[in-house]
Image 1 (cartoon, rainbow, N blue to C red):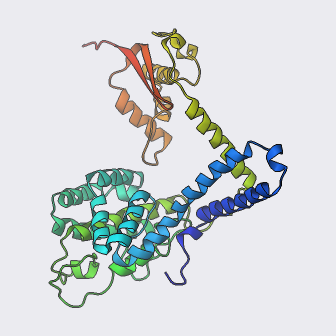
Image 2: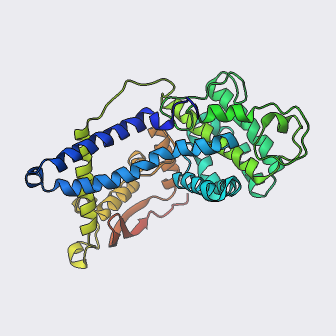
Image 3: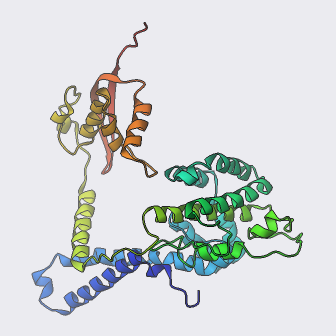
Amino acid sequence: MGDKSKIVDNPSTKDMLDQINGFDGFEALYRAVPFSKKLLPKLDNIFSDFSNLKDQASILLIPDQFNEIFSQHGWIAYESMNFEIMKGAIKLYENKGLAKAEDYLADYYNEETLKWGIIRFKGNSEFRRRIRLVELAKEDYLSGRYHGCIPLLLSLLDGLVNDVSKHVGFFSENIDLTAWDCIAAHETGLQALASLLNKGRNKTNENSITIPYRNGILHGRELAFDNKIVAAKCWAALFSVKDWAKALDDGKKEPKAKERVGWKNLFSQMVKTSQMKKAIEEWQPRTSSEVLYLPFTGDPIQLPVNTPERAVGEFIDHWCNKRYGLIANALLYFTDTTQGKKAGMARSDFGRHVPSSFKILSVDDQAAAVSHVEVELFLRPRIKL
């Protein structure tokens, strides 16, 4: 990547690595002072967990490694891309070459990846208004009609960037696709990708290509562009642009005032993590003698706090009393949505059949974070006028 900065130099990543390196120095001091282990014997376990953290932190280097290898071939790293896929592609490239790695990356853009990628479009108005066309492109792609989906995806890329930037499209020479502290919008990411895809194609070419050259495809000079790898790269570019747009929505176009977290905060977090790990290891499912209050009817506030049956009881109580805003707060959302809209969605989903009361029958603790709660609902009868 020459003199260009690296993704690992992004503020959020760099600060994390700086804190880890600082804590590494603290560990060296601890090991060097003879009496420190007697004064603070429990730190050994903390430093053991810290070693695992350092190993896991190596994942922060993956996007740079990915771009160094693949950006010149039309793939770039972006936030919503699976990091294990990036790692797998790098390993395949190193062991079996570019062709195998590109086949592997193309296979990643399957029906499941496209489904969840398109769901994320609902969080941005410019992407949301194009979902109908994106769904048509998906249908063509999954059916192998690459000649149909590729030109459509390229046109969507151009229009989306134009509307989001309120300036120029993806393939304009003066487009700025960078954003502060963003993987997709790093200068080695979308900016480099747009330059590659916008290269001039001045001769008609009948040989198969693996890069979605916009000018050659849309101007009819590339006659063998219709293959899975070219199509998958178009999807990758589209999802990268979505991550760039989200960075802009989050106010990352320009750098923010730097907030530095001291190593004490990192140490405190590691202590909490160690405590949580210990609690998970010591977890045991409750026996029937510990839930003698089941079956239960009545006000769920009478149930023990921080139990799954209490959470379920409170949720259904909100449902019985049509508290859709509180129902919305308990649900998981995959897009950025206002509180009012969440409440409206909850009313739409839960307002048709409202229970009059309920009975919690049983609870089955299956894992530290998994319990199955069986509930009997009593529905209000419909009255026909």
